[in-house]
Length: 525
Ligand code: F6P
Image 1 (cartoon, helix red, strand yellow):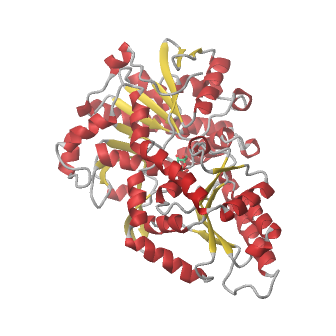
Image 2 (image 1 turned 45 degrees about the vertical axis):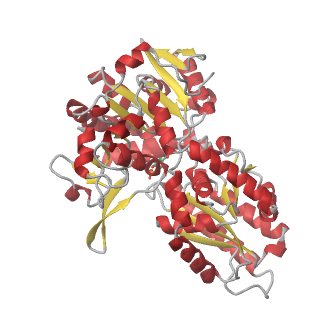
């Protein structure tokens, strides 16, 4: 099936096109900014994860409203009577409308059906699927709750809704039932499995029927889009037109394409070049000891089993066993960002991670008494990370390892390349991550083959400088043209909307960098 975004604009798409003045309604479960209580005071912080990194810059650029779950403990007191707040707090650019979920919707809908059923199912870790019928009931309610808020917004603001991710699979149909004239675009951030796996889901038909009520469904890779089309054919007998990249079902036609999510190249590159970054890099070197000769490996992930952290550590264990000359000369810094702490699988995974790191560090540190006191094979840091420090690590790392067992895209891979302004580092990407299809100049690894990954780490560390530069420079050139804004433009072009055009409307009020709140409201009203 040809799933590339094409230039094709059908007459009915033209009719559905949304005028720039209508603005955009983005909907996702996770909100971009969360109000929490820290040391007795309310604070506002940006949330973690690929979805926020991708969409926040787009909405900052074009304005609009983002509808999302108000998950923070101080969220309610921060919003106005209409449940909205202008964000980001330091320079408001768009409106965040918070949805309040009941404890059942959170437990059964988000933690249960989304995180313990759809997430492991789509990532093909079937032993972790913990299905309960009541989760489905709560998932339906969660989606209804979101639909109510979106429909209220639609009555005043816009005809274009951009729905994100697996938490909200029922939203396209719920919206269309009430407001059939609305344009609904869906982006699926995670993998989509083939029929052999999808058949595990008792509600496979309901999920597919709802997604096929959207005007477009966009996946990270052509392979996921093909798998979706196959599921649509097998489970709901939909009519798949491979040449046009469309699926007809229930009297409605949906465009189904692929467009890999990306990053804002400029943000990472300019931060990487900042003098503050150089200072942070030097400070980190001093902290770990070992001098300039110490080679550094890096991993940055949400603490999620799909990221293959244990497999990565087993590979590092292999690396030091096979190449003991690197003991005391190479250290692997792992940043693990806590996530989904209320889900059992995540708690158990975290325990195994800690235990594994302790064992590996103990084994290789005790192998030779002359090793430097400060040296650790793995430096494990479990916390959120500030943007400036993250970019300093990216620039510093000789090698960054992405070892997901399955991953829709993986933005860490792209962020690392964007921050590698010296073009001296090497990226290792799992063949199971969407990013491997785009960043073909990385070293592609199989996370299940610990010895193979160990050899790739060594290969990366010993790679001649000109090969490192050639590979990194090719990836950076690719990202220049395939950045976040190209992704957003590509996704919405399927429904006849141009983000660039929305931005030009905004530009009449203020420049990109110094946009005023007044200007943004004008764009979205
Ligand atoms: O990209 C997948 C995703 O589920 C996003 O929707 C989300 O931002 C991120 O992972 C973090 O997960 P959660 O929202 O469950 O904290």
